[in-house]
Length: 318
Image (cartoon, rainbow, N blue to C red; front, side):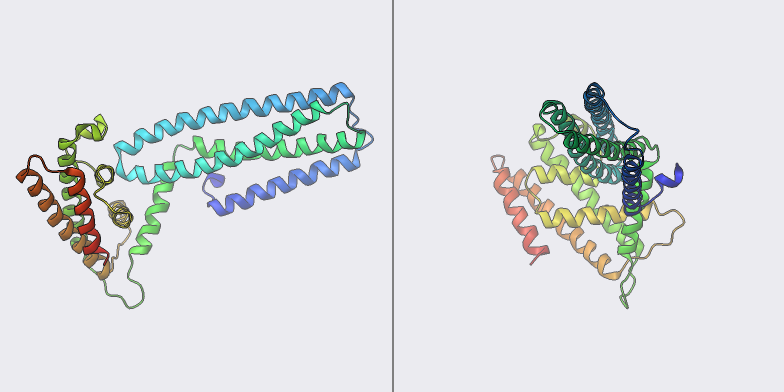
């Protein structure tokens, strides 16, 4: 079981495809070899359609309930731990896409069964045989997908494994490319700390001006993690999308450094210079934003936010 869970997503797709092919081939071979031995009466065929539809509907309902339950737990973990939050967001996205695939196949399986029951009396023997075989094949495929999805969903180490995958990729992207010179890891982390503190102060200042703009969980925190600060400032329309993406990459890189343990970390000089530039501009823009707000008690926060966003964009993305 551990070997199955440790497979990369691409290998997991190959394994799933192989199992589906084997099951399909086995059903066809059994059908051909035992055609005269497996003969279902009308009642048996109707009962088979009915049972298949009920089983698939029940399994899908249970799986959907489990997904909603785990999604709620993911949201709690995301708020409490910024590092685990990266893995949680990636897992949630992956599980959501898996649920869409399973929903489509389950819907097809149930529809085929209902179709078989509805037009049973109008079908020829050959058509009925085709629908019975098709329903069995589709349900076998659906059961395999549900099995793999359930195994991945209950895996207790899924967040850690996903976090290691994300940070390994981030560490690889941070390395100097070609003949690019290395930068100082200490300078990189110092610049990140300036960004994190600036963003936290900026977010809390916006919250003080508009307490209803965020949740109680965020309002009660003394020091906001960078991702939470980014959300608050994005809600106040101070961010451009380019800056959000760049800060999110920087945040992941920092988490990759902090969770590298004994893995040696290298960072390029270009990235060090870029994060230092961002830190200086954000600090300057926050000071100007705060001074303008305090100088005029009736200042238009939305207009000031828009003006600040334009300034940041012109300075960072000319």
